[in-house]
Image 1 (cartoon, rainbow, N blue to C red):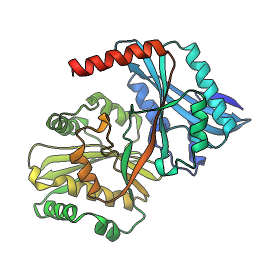
Image 2 (cartoon, rainbow, N blue to C red; image 1 turned 45 degrees about the vertical axis):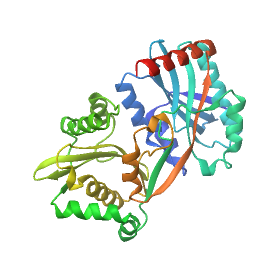
Image 3 (spheres, rainbow, N blue to C red; image 1 turned 120 degrees about the horizontal axis):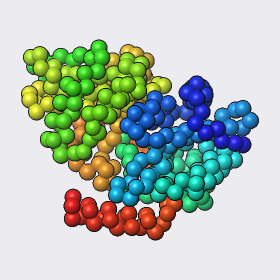
Length: 345
């Protein structure tokens, strides 16, 4: 087997579309283009058996602050036939050689796309990457736990599954006259205003406005990306956007205004999004992250209660695996990070 480095979009999409297993939008060609717009270098790899692709992994180089180094990071990958030990070995050998030739790489990281309840099924894969020096880490980039709604249910079944308080808040928003609209095209200035209010209120860090503008450039609107808004008396008071990929949509970002929060607009907004996605034939709706006990989700208690109100399946992923390429420098990095976190916040 051999590696095809940085294949064409046609080759990448053809392989992904041939898979029957779920694939995250984070492994899509479009998300790679988004990261290039953000000035983050991509590495796309196809493991080939002759002319046939077997396995794929898209990596991004993420800066390590202060050290002029990068993390080589694979979000929700690899994808394909991970039971093919020869293909996995070919991929990991290539990555090992690549890091030796690129001294700027401090670590290689995988956020694996397997659910914890499937861990036994993929145990041989986990043993294999362990033999290559990858160790499970408490560090994480993506939410480790999430809520997924199966939209193959009827609308009535989805409604009845919601918690009583959630249904009450949806009906309350209707009685107060909240209206839900789909943006004909993303207005990132308006969207960002709502997101900024939310982040300041909740004291959380979020992506820059430029990131959202680049998202709109990388993903075709309506095909992949849809932006929704909730209005009260003509004023936009809540918004969210979803990313659709294959048969799944993901609630990627959203927020509420500081005004008219007693209208419960975010509940009606989310319910109308669920109905819209169902009517478009989407099978799964990922609400994208709930409290998982890590620092990454600290302060997410409120949004977790909100998402659990729709009573989807709670999914926990196997987690994050890391290989350290430069141990001494990595130890220095961790020591510096702990000091900064403790004394500088």
